[in-house]
Image 1: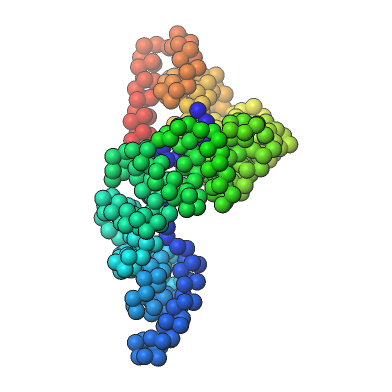
Image 2: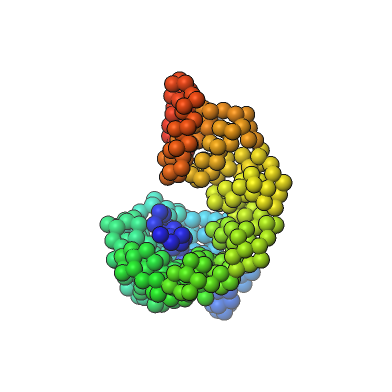
Length: 388
């Protein structure tokens, strides 16, 4: 199976088509003339002087674009306004009641996330449908995400693909990438590496960091295209430069191996640290391995143990196995068979098959009480970490 981002497979995130504060501020320029006319007619006491007041002047005259823009200003920090979800909701609703598709999408997102209102997926779905009926691509993408994850609706991958397709055709980069992942996995659509590549490329060329990573990974693996490490590294670097942690980690890995880039432990460590700063478990594990093996840094088992511990705490099976090995051999820590067995049990539960034979070896030198303690500790760890 491809090591694509496939974030949609585990988590629903409704797309918020909220404009940025800059976008809302630019709308204030349009509001200036509206506000000026209102001032001259006595509607306002004075000429507005801030982005908020300029937009509000026009919004109070019933302009749906400015009503929506004011909602954005209340939603985001800056421009003299602290986040105020309740007021944002009011203005989004006013604009949505005018039939303004962008505001209908924004209002749906507020319901989907529970911003300023009790979270209500059916209500979100209804507003997304209104906006989608007008061809709003963000609403179409969000409907696809809801059907993909089964949030507010019965999970239906084919229905999700249909909505993602509509949004992708309209140029929505998130939908293009998600549709590419669906084709790569054969989820809701026939599996097609060619279609996956085509949609990844469309999205990547719009600057979508996840798509840039996915496209690079396809080049690296030679899936849908001839293997090309240079192009792979180029696309993954573009993604990494946007601070996409998975790409940062993978670029570090490519420097370790010399895939498409000159082999460099120093560059590898630098990129891995960037990803680890975002709590990327794979990067934390890779850094642990560099310290354990002395790649680019002096061998330091204590630091290796620390980094493996960070990744293991996130459920990384490889790191859990390495911790078991280090406790069993006393590298970087006092030798402890009970602690070693605990981590090997967890590694095995995480799918690390090599842990089984190692567990059998360690158990031969342990008492029944020690084994029971390790099993209890592993179970306690799982109950605490898997429930948080």
